[in-house]
Every structure is written in C-alpha cells, then in structure tokens.
Image (cartoon, rainbow, N blue to C red):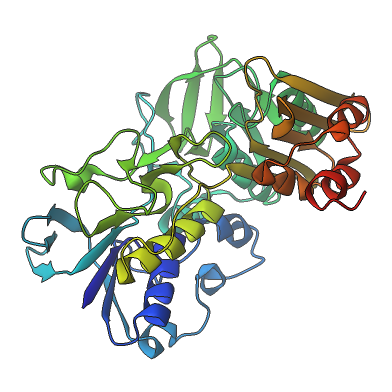
Length: 415
C-alpha cells in the first residue's frame, strides 16, 4: 500500500504520522514544494522577533523524525493528478503511483490587483523565504506599510512593530479583522493599536506602489501617499488547487469532501485549508483556513485512507485567537449571529474589554471577545456540545461573564 500526501503543512504531517501509526507496513510519501523541512507558518511571527530560529518553526523538532517513521519526504511541486490511473506527475515530469492520495496543499496568498505589487521590497509574509526578506528590510526606523488588517495581518503586526519600525496598516474595510469581529470590537482593537504608536487607516485602499529612489511610494485611494522601505501584503488567502486542472475533482470554494474527507474521486482525500469540510455549528461545508482544523482533518483523513469510512468527520469549529500587543481577542462559531437569534454584549471602552454571545434558540452558536481570558475556552464547549441552556440562557443574557457556571450547569449538569 502506497499512501501519498501532497502538502507538508500541519494537515499533511499529522496525516503521515497517523498513517504510520495505523498502517505500519505501508509506504508513505510526503511531498512539499519548499526546500525547508515541514514547518508551521504560525511560528513566523516568533521568528521575526528572534524568539526562535528557523528550526523552531519546524513541525517536528527531531532531526530524524521522518526517517525514523519511514516517511519519504520530497521537495518538489506536483504538476497534475490522474485519478483514473492513480498517478501524480511532478514538476520534473517524473511520476508516482499511489493507492491512496491526500491533498493537503493549503492556501496561497491572494495577490491584490495593485500596480507595482511585484516591485522589489513588496512581500507577502507567508513562508520562510518571505520572513528572511522581511527581516533584512524591517530594521529599526524603517517605514513599513502593511496592506490588510485581517487575521494574517494582525498575526504579524506585533512582531513587525517589535522590530522598531514605523508601522502603518492600511485596511479597506471599516474595521480591523472584519471576518472575526464586529464594528465595536474591531474599533476597540484599532484604538489599542493606536495607543501603541501604530497608525491604522481603515476604510482606505491602496491604489498603487511605485519605486522612489531607494524606497517605495504607496498611493492611497484618498489621494495621500506613504513613503516606505518595505511593503507587506496580507489581503487573504485562497485554496491551492491550480494543479488539479483536468483531474475532474469537484471544487467549489475549496475541494469538496464528504463526511469522511474523501473527494468526488475514490481514494483521493483532502484536508486543511484546501478542503471544504463540514462546519460544526451550521452543518454546512466551508473552508476553514485555521491550523486546528487542518490537524483534525489530517488525522481523520488518514484514518479513512487506511480503513475506508472508519471515522466520521462531524465538523470542525471555526475559531480564531489573536494576541495583539498583549490584548487577547477571540471568535468562535457564528460570532456574527443568526437570523432571529438573541445576543448579549458587554463593552468597557476604557479597559479594552468586550464580550459578545450569540444565541440560536436555546443554544449558544457563536461568540467573540476582547480582553477576556478567564474561562474563555469554555465557549468552545458550549457551542460544540449544542447542549440546551435552559435557565442559563437568560442568566447569560443578563450577565455574559457567567460562562463557567453556564458550562457546568448546562453541559456538565453540575449546577
């Protein structure tokens, strides 16, 4: 049995580890398209502030992990897949046969339609090559423009600022992290960043970038210009599916999968950012570009590659947690609410505290918070359990901070 895993991120590495545990005699091949050992993009901010070196980003720290587990690691782009013959083609024109295949190719940054976006000094912050380029240019006193204040932008915002640069963030939407926070929460986060001497320009777009001497000139759609020694784009990602042209695999927002993470082609599975898998609160199928979902997908897909339809994927919870200069923010599930639902909101502008609970009928379906860390983890339990809240719904509407009591009372039956 030959299992091939395309994609050396968290989903792919977790899948290989699980495959080896469940199928000790199988041949396992892990294919990535970067020269480094498999690593976590989520560790790049720590690399930028020199809390770790590059080896600290690696997903498995032991130098012999892959050899010891008899996982063949290849660094080479895959150019195409032939499901009928169970063959993949590499960029070298070599081919490999497989019995079971997992596509875990993740996402690729969206390139905004801005003139000058490919000039020297304009970078994504997505891989280790980007991190090296940014570290070279982001020296103390350098003016840096960060395009995008979404989740990716806010992950790297603090690490950039800690390098002693002059940072300006440009966001087209009316608030920071608009896919994670409402206007009140996004505004609170903006004010926090401004208190740390970071300039945040919301409702503002970039119309062009030009070379100006040794630096760059960034033109804004309001007519202003910003001088910069470095421009970083963080305007979102899209599933990496381009190499699947001609494979006749069903794709919507991402690769469509069933409840076992199998695609429309037998013996081909998908996991992580590239997969449109089941969402736990809604029951629908969505792309969740977050690492916890990627790891869960990788484990379940691998189990079903070894033994068909042995583990059901009941859905992952979409959740995001950010640490922005020490201010913790989070969102869970349907944080934006549901039609006909109820909500409870606490807002303390002076203390940078915000808590928003969203209810659908007798259940908690989503939540978002800023500044709250105690018991915030029980939000996941309350949402995922779908436990009827009973009297605890009204108590939470009256006082949203009673999260732990509500969890013990409704889920654990202890209060």
